[in-house]
Image (cartoon, rainbow, N blue to C red):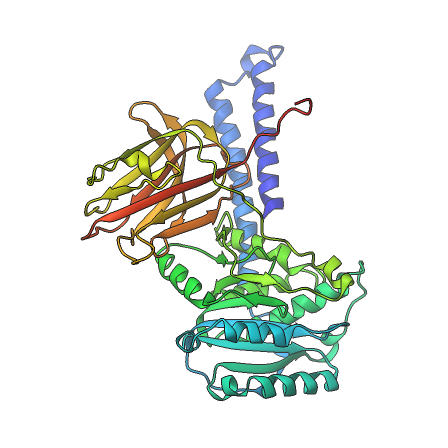
Length: 466
């Protein structure tokens, strides 16, 4: 994707340079000179031909993703625990595990997962563990340990354990060009086998590794996020700062994701490909929730930690709302004003029966690089007066009359009246934001409390002499 985009950009730049050359070349005889309009037509035609060529390449590439990779015809699975036929659930929690040189954290991961889930949560999800490897002793011991510790979950149909591998010559490893290549290859193979097996069990698929701690009631967080995003296009929702674990996909996208992963060498790190996959399906920026609900457990293998470096949750500090003016077309009451929603204190803004299309608009005095934004609504103690149907947008290209922005990009919908997301920007896009817009998407028949809008900005580096 980036290579093709780069070629397009280089072609357009070349055409612009050619245009300047044609305009400035005063030594050309008059009878051979072209008018400016004719020059532009020629340049546009060449550019369009280049773009059409790139589109054809993308279509050919995407068509390859629709085909069933021949390698999957040699995938062999053995059911080690659980029922082979499962009712369709909301979510499959997929965990791939391979034999480690040191102690495995798989059992700890499963324990954390089930302890963090209520009985009601378990009705909506299936935990699928795929063991990849050829050592029969390790397979038997791991399957026996899982069956012994989690038998009730297996009997109730909440847990399934399978062994998967590619047969024949496909199981042989190639010569790897880096010390980590073998681990990358095993990780990618395990992920492909896991996703291939998980295609028909649920509407959504959560990818986890075997070294994860889960936050309490993590499924509730995922459920409400999926509900809020249901009417909006997305490819990957990211619930963790970890490179692979914590990513949720539509199950219908798994066949294309599998084909895409198999287009690259086996030792290409999987996490480097996932973001490119979302770009290919037109999710141009990551969708990552600020509060991680999955965390990395401590590994006892320094070599694996080198190959799979852990990305720690960022310490954001306190919000630093830059100076701004707030406008709204909502009806206020209780002597509240819109500005209260943006001031970092205990004040808030009350809106009476907001209707679809109502907004609260924050116009910054100076454009800012916003890196995180949060919206808090409702009374947390009683769980009332939430803005149940709303979206947050960031705006640029400020306008003076009236005070607003000409263009907006969607950050995301409110989830149970709240939003807390990291802000990413498309490559080459405008990164200084001038507006923050809270938009009501459905009418409410009750008052709404907009407690606070919080903003974190990227601070400019101070001069070294200061």
